[in-house]
Length: 96
Image 1 (cartoon, rainbow, N blue to C red):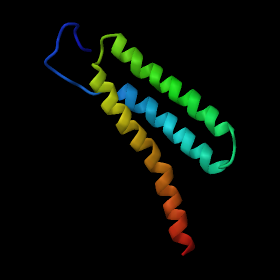
Image 2: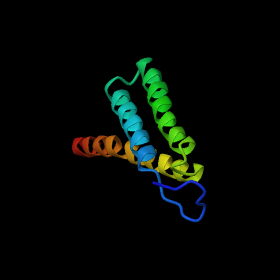
Image 3: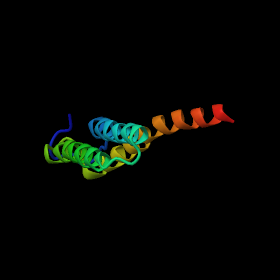
Image 4: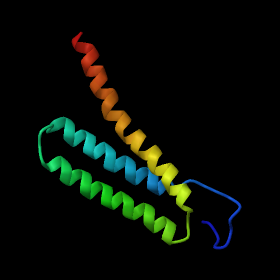
């Protein structure tokens, strides 16, 4: 846990990464199963709001700097979108 007033060290927020990864993979999986559904927007809104709340709470709680959660949020989005994409590519390659 980061002590208040320390400005010399940076450590990334795994809470932000995990929350954005879950939100992104849930959206990606739902969009794959129901590609033309309007519920995809609801999944995006709810998942994004919860993940943003987790990241904001880490900053406001003094656990991380903004740069910590922004970097890990980006990593979580990339990691969450990667797994379903890889599964789709494997399926596509098997049809060739």
